[in-house]
Figure 1: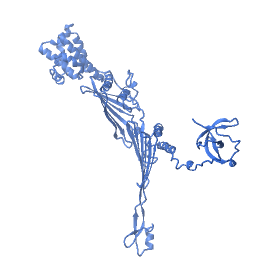
Figure 2: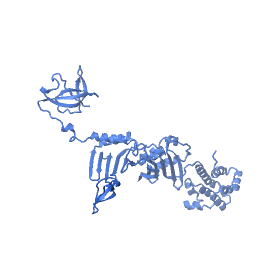
Figure 3: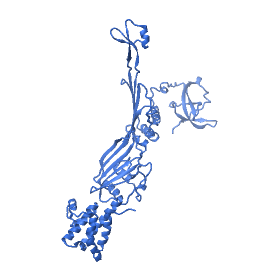
Figure 4: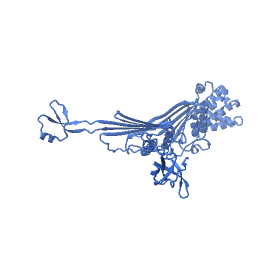
Length: 539
């Protein structure tokens, strides 16, 4: 059972007594004898209204002005001081004048406000006029999620002037240090910002208490600041708002997302849709050093080093060399630097691949196709999860004289980029890297190298006027081919055509796998019995 504060008890009890003024002599006697003592017991300060005057700029006995700002007072001690000071000043001016009917109303208003504030303080209710809200939200704190470089914390502040401050934080895959990610500062319409602030703060004027603990969920906390600078804090888990905020038929989170134009925010419900990939960059570097060679070298009289052979020192000493002296030396190996750079960019519809060897050899290929590149990025979004299951091992043996490393950067539409790096091998790469490579490889193969390097084009025969066209076709997934005649020179290998098939000559769609030209006396089948292609198949 929750205990009431002294201020709340004071407000409830004395509100009852002041309501009886003019009706009960005993009540008036009780107020005269005990009200001052009760004010002191509740630790209200009687300063003749000085603290109130400093804050609001007028005297506490100006009841007309006081009535207009009572609802703006949110400090229990201040309103208690006002009550005590008014009682003292009235009594000092005229004995027991606080019992007059014209003065009773101001006491009831003040006591009623004290009750509201005390009750709000007891249950954590927001009071006053809100001017700013700040929401901090976090994603779930699974270790594998923490290590995946995704946004873990987000913070948004909205004030009554339309100002919006948004920032997001990630954790690196190698450690749990917080890294600043997205950041935006902008303004929205004041009417919109004030509607958000009022709607949310009004909800917290009621009783709010979060006593659940949801496994696997993130968390949120909100700080609401009123015009007096007083801050009220509430918290909960990022789950469906119907659980967090019952008796509410709309979403606070969606209201904020729509108003500020930032889709990817956890807020109260954690319902963040996956951000759209707009760019993928893969950097690969390999450095190979030739192994250092040690052995016996021999120097001539001018001390110019000549490498003759590798052999042990004992053998060299046995052979003897009167004109040379033997010396054990080491020769440093050379270094080869090799790198690749792959960029898939949806905005301009390009896939660009660059290969560099020792800075002296460079190859660059660029594909441009907005539609195909966007389809590729969409497939990667749907089917490749690069953001989980990193395999970090501490006991991997390094390859002598060789190092390979990579860096993958994924840029999103209005979201903090993901960045992964490590050694370029099965243990250092994301577990699903092979899926990503297969999609990219299929894209490049589909684009091909063009017709200059394609034997289907440079080995293509041209038909003489005296020759007939025989097309080899296959049915469905079969491997056996059949000859069909045609007069259509536009048919190409790979085309689908309609042909008569079977004893009843029903129409079938087949694929052309080869085209051959024959003079009439060299045909592979009798012309009269060979069936003819009806037409090209058009979807």
